[in-house]
Amino acid sequence: MSNKRITTSTIREKKLAGEPITMLTAYDAPFARLLDEAGIDMLLVGDSLGNAVLGYDSTLPVTMEDMIHHTRAVSRGATRALIVADMPFMSYQASLSDALMNAGRFLKETGAQAVKLEGGATVAETVRAMVQAGIPVVGHLGLTPQSVNQFGGFKVQARDMAAAQQLLDDARLLEAAGAFAIVLECVPAALAEKVSQALTIPTIGIGGGNGCDGQVLVIHDLIGLLPGFKPKFVKTYRNLAAEITGAVQEYIEDVKTRRFPAPEHSFGIADDVLEKLY
Image (cartoon, rainbow, N blue to C red; front, side, top):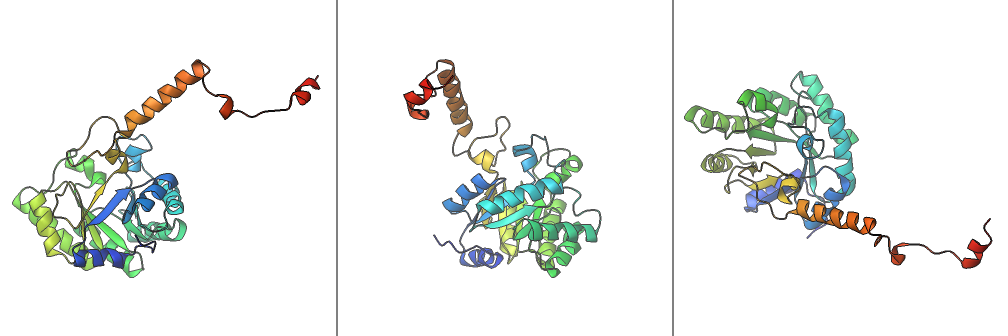
């Protein structure tokens, strides 16, 4: 595995070569370092940190300052993967000047190489302006979590003719605006594959089936750190929540029974020093 930094060009080249692209979320330096060393292509500092890290029940409360803070941490941990920062709710919707200023902050202040924002036709001109300003952009279509209240919940999108055509049209608009990749979330697999084939830029699926050019998951879902509801599209590779709980319970028992700390965890002092104390 090369230690050379992955770039937007690398990601485009992977699509041309038919090489699947790997992406995971990261929210802090230790996880970023582990995922980077494991060989992940892209790290998404997702506004999903609202659910995964900050204890919110949606992404909507996440602020620019939250995202700046966590993206800085991820950038300190990863030296090879391409880092993409999510633009949080209302950081780009109010005005084009807000959008450019906030997107620029990620590149100036955090070390991220790109930003991601949700929407199709409604954000195409914003994407175009960002790209013209030198800010690489990843699009996001399908189930866009910042619009969860508008959708009436977390539901599979674009199942009827009109919605499917709109998604394909939006994908083409984002490509024309200069996005270098598009996340497709919770859309029918056959539609996601059709969109992927229609574009020259890569698609990254999350609940979009195996026909996308790459895949992304929330790291906490992948390793079993988030209890409770698990989306259909998640594959949990480890159950670390149980491992962590077990380790903590063993620690509690060791402390209560004075098995920890043992002599090997403690520091000594000369007897004559103790004897002279008064």
